[in-house]
Image 1 (cartoon, rainbow, N blue to C red):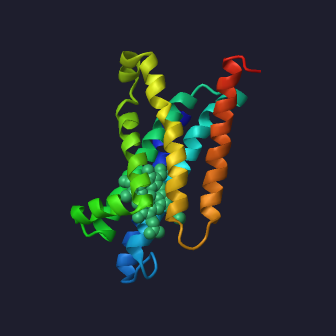
Image 2: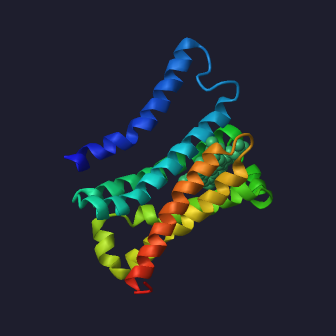
Image 3: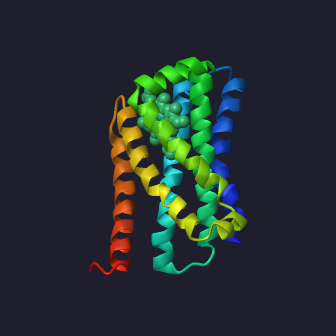
Length: 197
Ligand code: HEM
């Protein structure tokens, strides 16, 4: 049951943003402040990183509560990270760069936060396209190795978020704390498996 309502649950932020845009249009005023393009880019980035944190929480929660529908939930959450990161990327290209890909390439070469964001996004692509059961079975042990990329993605997203910050570091500290703690949990778990302690 939970697995069935999960995709709907993950789309709630999307429909919330969409309804805010439509409401703003109907009211003839911007629902996202004086710089709506930038606000939208930031909002989709924040939703993507929150989905990433929740995805990485699935494994520790499963170990604690032994709930069976968690693998399905993790797949949907993982796809949501890709979905919102794609919206974040496209809103950046469309609203901040006016669909000028040359400007994007210049940003990529000159701005560390754009490079780190794109680096993280590129690593999300193979994970999203190999999330189905059939590909998982075909790739066997290689699937686990490939999906270990999520920890590298977490590290590069932390750098991306920190370098992107303009005003307040609060959200960046929150993301780093959550992702850092989840990475540490994973490292300790692997060390226990290898009988280091
Ligand atoms: C295609 C790659 C990406 C590009 C071009 C990109 C671009 C940007 C830009 C332009 C900003 C705003 C910086 C500013 O304030 O001027 C930003 C911030 C941010 N991005 Fe990305 N990004 C990318 C990938 C990602 C990914 C994969 C994630 C997470 C999964 C992510 C999460 C965030 C977050 C959380 C923020 C900061 C939001 C805040 O400070 O409130 N980005 N990104």
